[in-house]
Image (cartoon, rainbow, N blue to C red; front, side):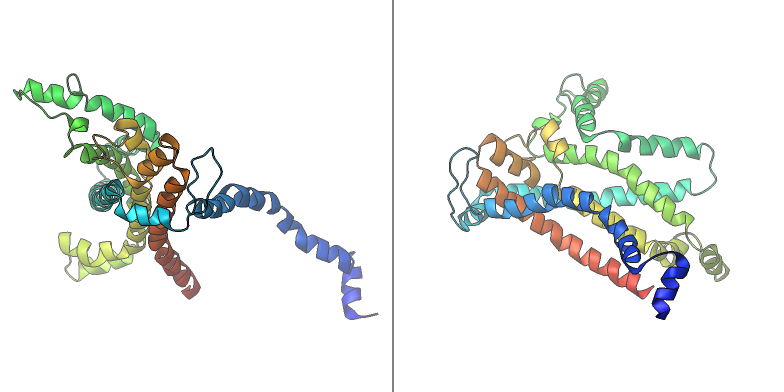
Amino acid sequence: MSAINLIFRRDGQTPGRKRRIQWTPYLFLVVPLAIYFVWIVGPTFYTFYLSLTDWDGISQMRFIGLANYERLFQDRDFHMSFANNVRWLVVFITVPTTIGLGLALIFNTDIRGAQWFKISFYAPLILSFVVIGMIWAWIYEPRNGLINSLLYGIGVERPPGWLADRQLALYAIIAAAVWRQVGYVMILYLAGLKNLDPSLIEAGRVDGATGWTLFRHIIFPLLGPVTVVIVVISIIDSLRAFDLVSVMTRGGPAGASNVLANFMYIEAFNNYKMGYGAAIAVMLFMLSLVIIIPYLYRTIKTEMEY
């Protein structure tokens, strides 16, 4: 009798029984993976195929190759939506990150009422984008909204129509998104500050670093991994911005506040150009991959080093 058989008999198991036990955990992944492929992977590939057709959602599909993409790069509305996404991206990376980091540094100290302030800044994050959009639409209301009522009160005769102004509409929506994002960034930076090695900060103070010097050369570099996560999440959130635009302006006035996700929805479900909408979705997907792939590469490389 071999040594392997002796081991299995000692444990009261047979070789076949051992193999079945090893495969058992993987069986629990069958249903989640099946759902993931049916609802995520499958529709993704189908969208790529759909972007090569002129399907309107009703009639027979007709393969047209790259015609949708050729039209896309000549479409003025696509250029405007893409530019608006870039503007959203720039503001979303800088403003919430700066304000959130500043709040985290303040609330990381022992100040009175810090817990209540943290809750108040974090509270918008628990609201859905639809609710936030409705709240800020009321705030921007031209006659009786909060902002214009205050402007009327201080003597401004013609306050701006925030969501009806081509120059202001996009930034008014971004302000609502920033209001929600600040609390999220603050919490992430607070978690990062709590995990900093106190000995490194103390060593900097011993060497004479204080205030801005301590923050610039020690604290902020140590927060590098948290900053990378925040920037990547902010970029992804800015690229898939849809809810606030749809609720507050639906892309108006005259497309001035349109973004790629909303443009895709309008073309696919309002104008019944499913193939063209799928092409916009593919472009949005590719833009996201440009950001996600370097981040995943950096994350995997870091984990392998440790």
